[in-house]
Image (cartoon, one colour):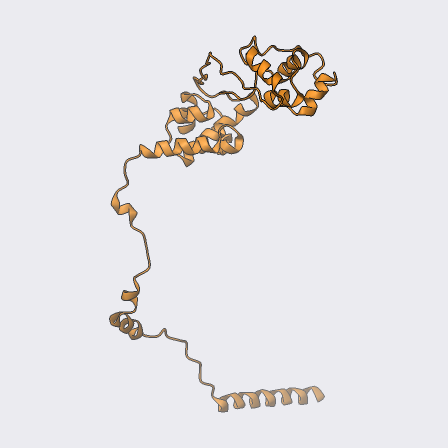
Length: 242
């Protein structure tokens, strides 16, 4: 049930002009601020708005208004409408603004690549496209296939994240169950196996990795080489003096 009257300001204008209700009572019923109702009474607000009779529209009764006029603390109650308008359900593909229509092929390509489990009807609902367009993008026969870039439809504003998650979840329920062999997960070995006597013995029995041996230095050979170099240098100095 609605809690706000139809055309609140117009209703407030009528109540101010035709009843002796307090500003607080009118403000509470019309969901306005008392100062705004006072401004309406002073002619400072809602100028040019024609009052709407809530009795004629079936939102209030005469008895309810008279009861409220006799008790300042009483609050008006909105009458329940006798006519219920069914909620309109959208039929057909989603309407896409003109400024976003050029992004639809990119969104379709993103959905086809990242969620191949989605059916064409689901993509049509989310993006607002046609089945031939989806087929052309799948088979890369679209006239602009070379220039298409996969883009998230949520980021493009073509659908909400909730709608995308719901469609993906719905499509996943229809997928065949995965074979048990695909559920093999690699986990660490239990502690009992890694700390058992056999495991410890096998670990210590492994040969240590071979390290390159340092070459042994022959001191005599090193000094002999240094002496030969020193003697060669002395001969060269003597030749330079001559």
